[in-house]
Amino acid sequence: MDLHQKEIQGFFNIPVDNLRASPFLLQYIQEEIPDYRNAVIVAKSPASAKRAQSFAERLRLGIAVIHGEAQDAESDLVDGRHSPPMVRSVAAIHPSLEIPTWSAVVQSWHTATSASQVQAILLGSWDYRYMPPCPVLIPKEKPPITVVGDVGGRIAIIVDDIIDDVDSFLAAAETLKERGAYKIFVMATHGLLSSDAPRRIEESAIDEVVVTNTIPHEVQKLQCPKIKTVDISMILSEAIRRIHNGESMSYLFRNIGLDD
Image (cartoon, rainbow, N blue to C red; front, side):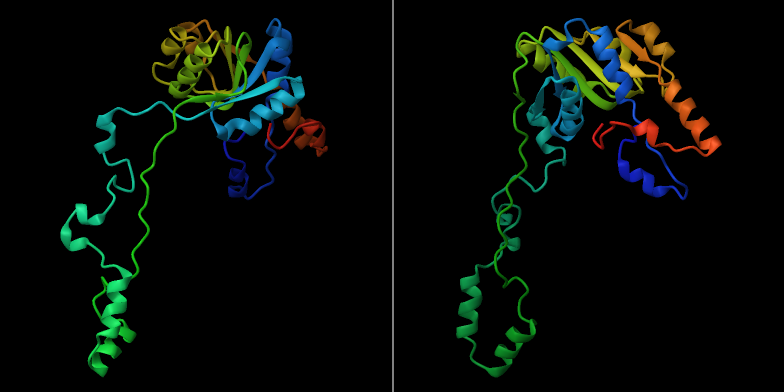
C-alpha cells in the first residue's frame, strides 16, 4: 500500500497492485476535521506537491507548498557535505593544480619549433594541464524557507506517504504557525514514528497526526494522544478476497489517481 516509490513494483516477479489509502484519509478529513472547508492542503516539500495537489482537487481546497530549508550553522560548512568546495579557483587549494588558460595552449602551438613538438601536441602527449579551462562550479546553497500559498487564518493539513523522522514535519509546522495557520494536521499512510517522535510531536505545534494501521503504533499512541489511527483493513481484506476468487481488482482503484 502506498509504495514510497512506484518503481518498487518492478522488483517483483509477480503481479503487484499498489493499493491506496487516500480514500480513507480523505474521509477522515471530511468527517473528523470541523470546518475543513477553511483548510489548505500543504506539501512540506516540492517533492510531495503532486500528492498535495491530488488531495486538494478532491476536497476542492487550496494548496500551499513549503520550499527551502533552514540554514545550516557555520560549523556544518566544513564537515565535507558541501560539494564542490567553496573556492573560486583550484589554485587556492595548491598552486601546482592551477590550469593554464586556452590562450597558453594556442601560444604553445604557434611557438612549436619542430615537427616533434607539433606531433606531441596532436597526439596528446604534451602536458596534460594544457586544456580548456573548466567552468567554475558554484557551491550549493539552500534557499531560506518560504511558503508558496496563503495559510493565514486557515487549517493547514500536511500530507505525505510516511512519517518517521519528524524533523521536517516539526519545521513545517513551525513555519505554518508563523504564517498564521491556527491548526495543523499531519496526514500520512505509514506511521513509523520511531525513536522519540511521539514525545516531540506532543511538544510541537502540530495539533494532530493521522496515520493508518499499516504499521502497528499502539505504544506510540500511549505516549502521544495527538496520534490518531485510520483503519484500512477493509481494503486489504477485499483485495485478498478478490485475488482469491479471481475477480477484477479495478473496483478498488475507481477514481484513484496516479499521484494519490
